[in-house]
Image 1 (cartoon, rainbow, N blue to C red):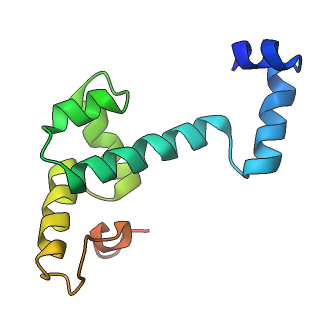
Image 2: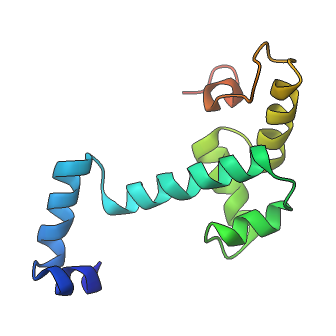
Length: 109
């Protein structure tokens, strides 16, 4: 953020405020959401190992990636992948894939 701020000639704090004003979320939340959306896509559409996906979206260890998947996708990585395969086969009553809401356990947010 500092490098971007220096190039734009705005302070880092002002640039962060502008980002929230125009995007509606902080830079950190935006980056996190993009990383998790990419991870979900890779889990659902590829056969890459979970460790490889974790590394490709910026996690240094699989344990942190598992925790992030549970928190932001509502299920661990292997469950996201299984739900996608089951959804593609029609087990969830959908023609392709499974949405994040379908992965949330009953009674959770």
